[in-house]
Length: 439
Ligand code: UDX
Picture 1 (cartoon, protein in one colour):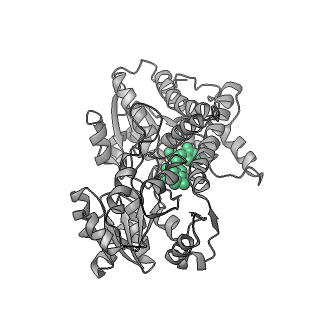
Picture 2: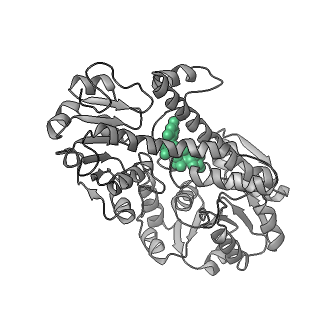
Picture 3: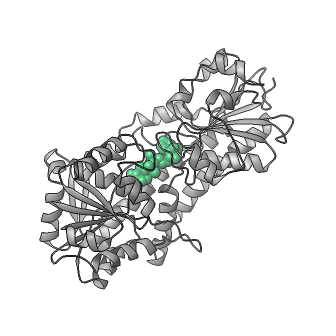
């Protein structure tokens, strides 16, 4: 089929490339001429495993093209996917729909007769119906659930597909687009517009709630002398609860979860439904960042002023260079403001981090970040941090003091190599090692 994808960020570029991979002819559209030029030349302007090769292959074969012209896209496509961002508004928790409105208006003016416009962006419930009433074109809603770092896999082999449709024709067209995926056994839910919109925000709210639940348990473990890693493992063995998204730490960030739960609660309140528990989820999440700073303050016995702090991680999660609302960078910046001498290292997110916080110190390697540090904070769980040799790391730092803000480092290995090791949600070591990390 001939498809277009409007918006070529993380979601759109991945969707466009994966649709080409499934055998479709695809045109990607973006208002950013620089991004279009890079993608057209087969280059992906962000880090997403597996995507660069796919874009290079399909742009070279001509099956995947990019343009800034809605006119060209409208003349080409039978089905148009809208994949633009819906950031948080500056003046409230609501989603900013400017880009969605512009994309629908832009393509609706240019479409061929019978074309289908499919929204994939995360929007407040009611948006699809309003767009369908505004524009004289057929609309469907097909939310995406892809995780950064696994975006290609999640698009080609999703857990489920959701089609929000008003006609059998729209459903048939979408079934044709995703024919290969459906033939592979992917479950499909065909529903109305409102439910399709709600699935996405409900899913993200559930995931955020799970993370904040275990982080609240981490607070309790810290107060009561329990260990949240063991608690989480024991909880996760119950199939009804499940193990995933129960890892305590410095909390969730990124371009989706934080803004989606706020926009969801805001929209629910507009509809007269109180989702106040999501404010608690948000607050617990933010408190975890405060806790790392409090720990850093306690552990640097002489105060933060002038303390050399190595921050391992800048991306909001591993396998991504995305620093939007990153807990790691947020903590790094706040320690810097408090007078600490902060050095950040991340395997992929250095350029984005520098753009966001140009005044922080940055190292070219993990060794360089560790050299001379009074305190090490592990805040994004890249595999290379997990695989660090604690003995070698100890030889580089000034004081072997580490806080594991992601709950994945092996406490015994680090302690055996002479480190004073603290993890969020685990009791402070008893005996010679005190809260100030000095013993
Ligand atoms: C999320 C949803 O998972 C995805 O379905 C949706 O389409 C977009 O939003 P993403 O933002 O890529 O995807 O990240 P995700 O893997 O969900 O992680 C979100 C955050 O939660 C990260 O900061 C991660 O470090 C944190 N997290 C995750 C935890 O703190 N603990 C966990 O147990 C799991």
